[in-house]
Amino acid sequence: MLVVISPAKRLDWVRDWRHSTALPQTEPAFLPDALSLAQTARALSAADLAKLMTISPKLATLNHDRFQAFSATPAAADLRPAALAFAGDTYAGLDAPSIEADAMLWAQDHLRILSGLYGLLRPLDAIQAYRLEMGSRLANDRGATLYDYWGDTLALALNAQAAKVGGGVVVNCASVEYFSAVDLKALTLPVITPVFLEGSGPDAKIVSFYAKKARGAMARFIIENRLKDPADLAEFCTGGYRHNAALSSPERLVFDRPVPR
Image 1 (cartoon, rainbow, N blue to C red):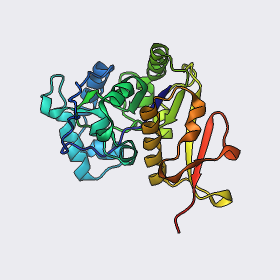
Image 2: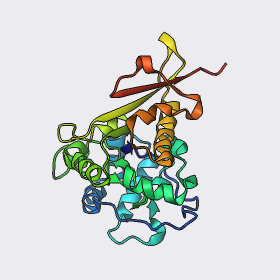
Image 3: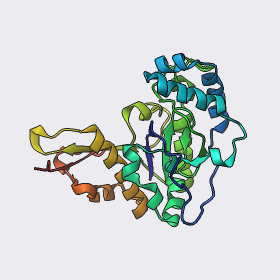
Image 4: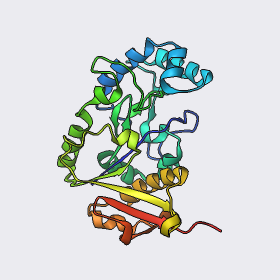
């Protein structure tokens, strides 16, 4: 079983990233592609980046500086393992710093982070600070968008990894924006997408903040329990969620929980 999650816009470059067992960082599989994209982005002004990513001038300047500093030979201090570098809601649910070393090593083979810049990341892959959403219309040498740039590359990489570890399914804990970068025509694996609802009955709804955190928690659940059988996903109960069999299908697992009063 492979599980995929989205990256986060917010990064943590302050907290001590080192795992308690000092697991070694690894090189991203598509580092040459990332360097090529970074070179393309480096040519843009801060104003261009603000328009491209719909961000404030302050954030645009920060990310302009990041792309200017992006290097093929970065200093060790400029690198962080991917699972410990991102700091959004999904990563609050994943809580990678507290994952034990043996579980993190299992995650290295079974967890993938989709990335607009790096394509596909393992949790221990060393990354430089960046921001580049998958949905950005960054013109590049392969097309007008990052979806064009990555093409069927990410799907083929997932196929290959699944064959390597004997995983027969992809659990999609990523956002629509990011999972859309996986070419489903090229993907040979069935996809299961967990859905997290607040409340029950006709008033139940997805609340983005909680759903993102739950997707990270689901990834952690898979990692900690080394799940192989998709049927075991229904046992997920972190945060008070329970599997709703009536609303679920083989491709869409629905979990809900009561709204706090």
